[in-house]
Length: 166
Image (cartoon, rainbow, N blue to C red; front, side, top):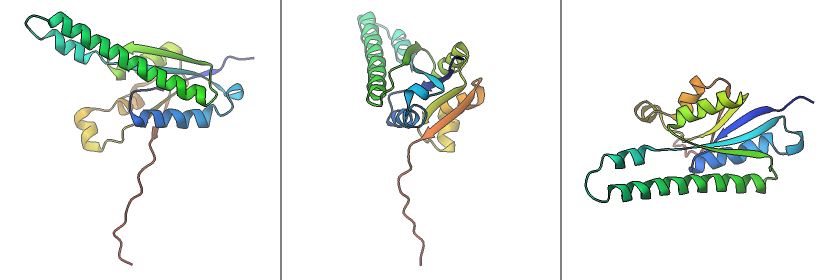
């Protein structure tokens, strides 16, 4: 029997991300024993806040840095715990969870390479073109730079109200 292809799911703490994870579990792992994929869930914990704290001057700087690092670690643990609970609720138990520190764009693309993934799945915050251009978009970056197929799952759109005159 050949080894299963790897599906990497990149999760963050957003509602969009967990919607996409649930969608992925429902569509690719509804029957975990017959799924063609091995699931690896990754989370990138940002070290940007800790880096900002390093620039602070004065007494107590080390205490502030320690508090920020602890908070970032706790946040990452909560994200993975929530993802694990969702997987268990859906009956998907053969899952690997990995947390990396760094810029999410690089972390995700590096994980794709490390695992030789066939598919990367992630949620979308649904930013408009202007926000994507100004803020950058992890999903947009990964769709252009990841060495595998990329699927971006958008949360169901809220119903649009039409102003058409009949």
